[in-house]
Image (cartoon, rainbow, N blue to C red):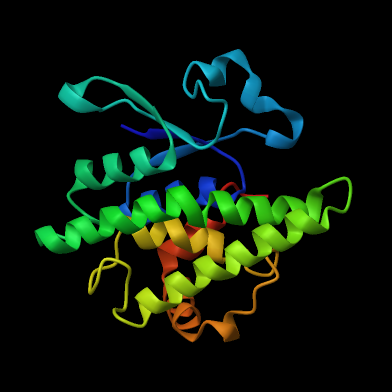
Amino acid sequence: MTIQLYTWSTPNGRKVSIALEELGLRYAVHTVNITKDEQFAPDFLRISPNNKIPAIVDPEGPDGQAIALFETGAILLYLAEKTGALMPVDERARWRALQWLMWQMGGFGPMLGQAHHFLRFAPEDVPYAKTRYGNETRRLYGVLDKRLGEAPFLAGESYSVADIATYPWAARHEWQQVDLADFPNVARWFATLGERPAVARGMAVPAS
């Protein structure tokens, strides 16, 4: 059966398409154009009540019954558990992967998203917000750089959902006015992930 993916061309949307590509799962793409408020359509709200992309419907969920899921962290963990991949087997490394996944969801997404808004899209110039979120963005890149100076991937030796969750946000470093040359360990990791064919395919979803 085919997983139904409801998405748009944002970092959060691309997390799930990368994971689906890495796992080799069959999926169909349904575009939800957030610039036209399609995320508020009743049919979509039945799948994602928080009116956010991405969301999935898996016709072969637990016990063979269909399941709808929203929130990227939940979706990534579901897909990892469904397939037995993209999570370390070692218990310590597994907890590290979960830790860094939560770090991305709680900080390296929301704060960078605020930087995007105030640096690129805000209808008026707000210097305080630009400084606040710009500084926090660079702090978070520093945290990421330190971790990636200790290990090749966020969980350690294994590529995991934590890396998949973080990569699409780092891919917009120019929007955040961040030069990866200032964070050499992030730059190395970013280049390594960018060479993965599944990452490239996932980043191109939905097709423009």
